[in-house]
Image (cartoon, rainbow, N blue to C red; front, side, top):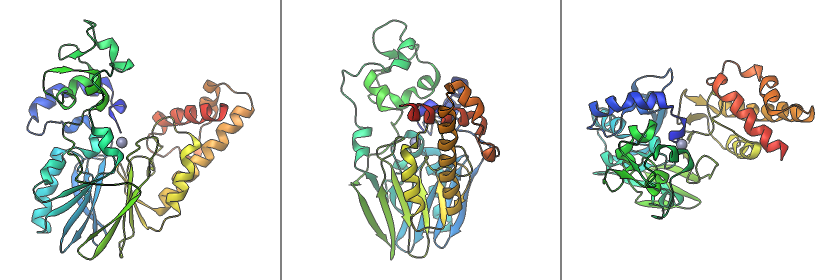
Length: 341
Ligand SMILES: [Zn+2]
């Protein structure tokens, strides 16, 4: 997820943590925090492993020729994982595949740059490029600009702009322009060496890894990664959540895309966050979206206001899913607005 998921409360505690972990440039506490804690590696199936840092999950395949890894996650995770991989597998990371360009998934790749090539969907280049110098401050940042000069000085920065100031400040001049803020806190995102448009097959150590472009509302540079040749694992970042209510104001526009993913051939499913999944979790995510649409459509047909719909559409069957309290009302709002159009 992009920075907007972070609260000011979290970000303001982080200023201290950032000093402590300056070697990494980005504090682990800035990442989304849930009940999932710790760093670990586990075997999923065949030659495919998952690696976790707290709520964040990456995946990699181990072959005689080396490793192909999805998502560096960040400098701290990459530093830890590189050392663990060297101890356990004794082969280098040959490829790092970006699922999308957001800072909390794509940072830290430079750690692997001595042995790895980096792969991303072609839109990723545009998303990490600096926007035009004339780009104004985004509306939600303008209130910080107390001296009204159209830029954010260190003394003006608040919340996650303050906590991640150095990661936004691409030219290190101590001042953030609208362009730097719109580009995002991506100073630690290394550009890809290899880009592709629709799909690419990566061959490593006699195994094939499919990388498939799937632009979504969350990220137009989004890639699915499917580990085949006896592994049967699908990785899809952020948007198809496992036993967790989807993030934000979703509409029914993405439902057919979730359905298309469900129709693919795989057994194990990894979202970039939270619990490890199986195909049944993708089916459940799809059913949630269909049930949500049906319930909101009923509320709209009954003439309910958005506020009434947020109260009446309780989605009881999903009460035990993570983020039920926070995200269900957001989901209802997104679907309500889409169906009212
Ligand atoms: Zn994201």
